[in-house]
Length: 211
Picture 1 (cartoon, rainbow, N blue to C red):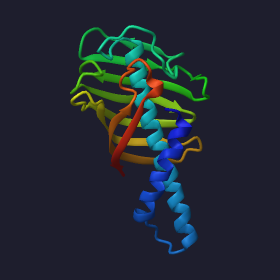
Picture 2: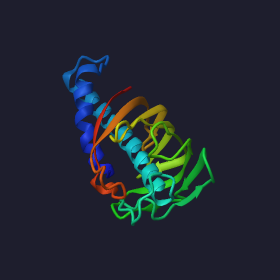
Picture 3: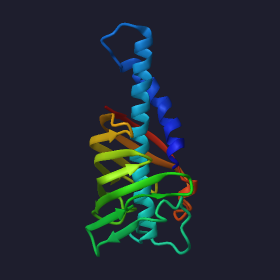
Picture 4: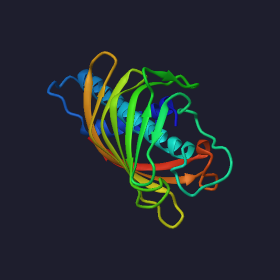
């Protein structure tokens, strides 16, 4: 789940959405197009950061033994947790703090700083479990992320799925520009289920809507 890959994927969806829904007071076609692409880029970054936080949650769960459905072996991940300090409380519900400090950069060039705070009702892989993520002075590659993400495990019949809902989202870019966003994504895993310790071969189908 690399940040650049998500940007490309969601930019396409965002452009299609905005072409039908974006409005601006000016009637100039060039201004309309400029606004459309600007909003498309903003939405792509928002989705990028939501997905990135979700991946961090999953990797932290595997690395710190609160994913459930224990498996033997070494987890294969993107190693986004190579530098933060992860604190996990005992029992459930758990409180989890993932502290990237003043900043640390992964091998794929993504720099994160600040803290992700999580409350988790049950093992991450248990159907019905809920994780609520909030952000404390949290930045990804210069973009500050705020708001609340509620992650709910909706898996049924052996098919891994979940809902990711973002409320009161706010992204502030490196230049100080900011935008607000909210929405819900429904994710169904379509490949990678037989290898739960390998997060690199996971493939997902994603649907939903955003404002």
